[in-house]
Amino acid sequence: MSRLSNALNMYMLLQGRRLMKVEELAEILEVSPRMVKEYRKDFEKAGIYIGTKSGRYGGYYLENKIDLKGIGFKKEELEALKMARETIKSGNHIFALNFETLANKILNLEKDFEHINYFSKDNLKPLYMGEREKDIWKTISKAIINKRKIELLYKSLRQDTRKKKSEIRIVHPYGTFDHDGAIYFFGYCEMRKEVRYFKISRIENIEVLQQKFAINIEYDIKSIMRKSFGIIDDDIFYLKLKISYPMSQLVKEKQYSLNQKITEIDEENIIFEANLKGYEEVKTWVLGMGSKAEVLAPDKLKKDVIEEMRKLQRIYELGINDCTNE
Image (tube, rainbow, N blue to C red; front, side, top):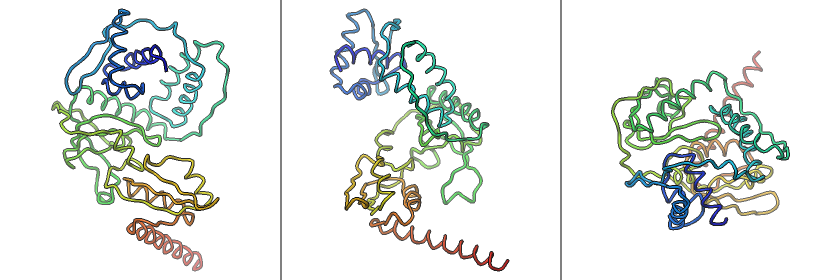
C-alpha cells in the first residue's frame, strides 16, 4: 500500500478504538513501528493530532476527529463487509443484529455497488441464550475497562469436575474472543493461579467486585491461540497422523496450526504433523475421522483412541443384546 493509504487506514483504526499500541498498528498495517511514527507526523502537519499515552498500557489515541465520508469504500472492502455480515449472522453472534444494522448503513451509502449473493450456513442456538450472553458480555467488558475483579459461578466441563456442582471463581478479566461461534473471555483465575478461558454460556452467575487488579503477568493471547488446536491451553505435544481420503482432502483445506506440516503419500493419503496444545480436542477430532485417521504419535493418544473405541464397542454390543432379548 502507499504511504497515504496506510496513514488513512491508521486513522480509521484509531477512530474505532480508544487506544492502540504502536507495535499493534505496525503489525496490522504491515510496516515498521518507525513508519507508524512517521504517519503520526504527517497527520500533525495536516492539523490532525494523535496523542500518546506512556507506560506499559499506553499507545496512540485521537485528540480530534474529522469527517471522512468523502473517502468512499473500495469494492473489495464492501464485498468483505457483506461476507462478514453473513458469517456473523449465521454464527448467531450476540451482536449479530447490531452488526447487520451497521453493515447495512455502510452498504446503503454505495448505491451503485454491484449486488453479490453470499450465504453462510446457520449455526443455530437457543434464542434465550443470545440475550443472556449479551448481558454477561457487557458486564465483563465494563469490568475489563475498569480493571475490576469478577466473581463467577461457573460450570466447567473438565473431567475432574463433571460430578461436581458449579464452582465459584474470582477472575481478573483481560479480554474477550470468539471461537467456533461461541464467545469466551480470558483472565487470571485466582483458584487455578494462571490465565484461563471461560465460555460465557457456562457462566451461571456473575458479579463485578469493588476490588481492582493489575495485569502483572506477560500473556500474549494471539501467540497462545496460534499454538492451540482449539482453546484449551495445556502442554504442547507432537502429533503425527496418517489420514486417508476423503478426510485427507478436508484436512488439506484447513489450517489447524501455523506449524503444521502435510506430506502427500499419494493421491488419497497424507501424513499430518504438528506441535499442538488442546489434547482432548485433538482426541475428539481424531475420533471423528474414524477409520480414516491412524495415530502414529504420540503413543498416549493411540492408546486413548483404542480405549474409546473399546468403550463404544461395549456400548453397541450391549445395545444389540438388549434388542435381541426383546
